[in-house]
Length: 186
Image 1 (cartoon, one colour):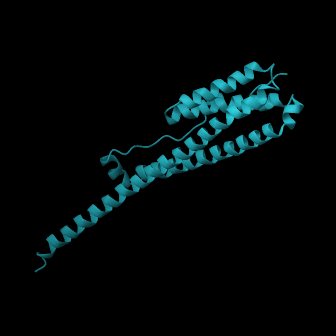
Image 2 (tube, one colour; image 1 turned 90 degrees about the vertical axis):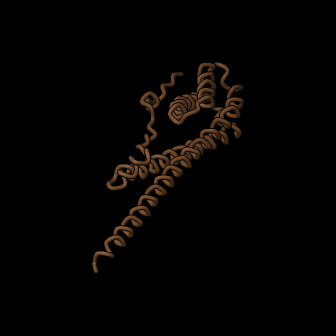
C-alpha cells in the first residue's frame, strides 16, 4: 500500500521545487530593481549638481577674471557629465568634475570678496550637500550590488541564477585619475 504514496510525494517535491525556484527568481528581480533604483538616485544627485554649477560659475566669473583655465575646466567637466549616458562614463565624468570643482574652491580661497559673497557661500554649501548625497547614494548602490552578487554566487541559488542568465554586476569604483589631490598654484 506504500506504493500509491510515491507519486504523491514526488508531486509534492516538484511543487516545492517550483515554488522555491519562483521565490529565487523573484528575489533576483527585487535585487536588480534595487540596483536600478540606487543608480537612479545617483543620477538624480549628479543632475542636481550639474544644475547648480552654472549658477556657481556665474557668481564666480566676476571675481575670477584671471582664472580662465579653472573656469573652463569646470565648464568642460560639467558638459562631459551631461553627455555621459551609461553608469561607467557618468562616474568617470563625475570624478573629473569633482576634481575641477576642488580646484575651483581652492582658487576661490585667494578671493576674499568672493568667499564673503552670500550667493557663492550658499551655492558652495548646496554643492557640498549634494556631494555628500552622491557619496551616500554610491554607497547604497554598492551595497545593493553586493546583496545581488551574493545571491547570484551562493549555492544553491547560483543554479537558478545561471539558468535565468543572471550574472554578477560591477560595483562603482572611483577612477584612479580622480583620486589625485588637485594641485592649485597661486
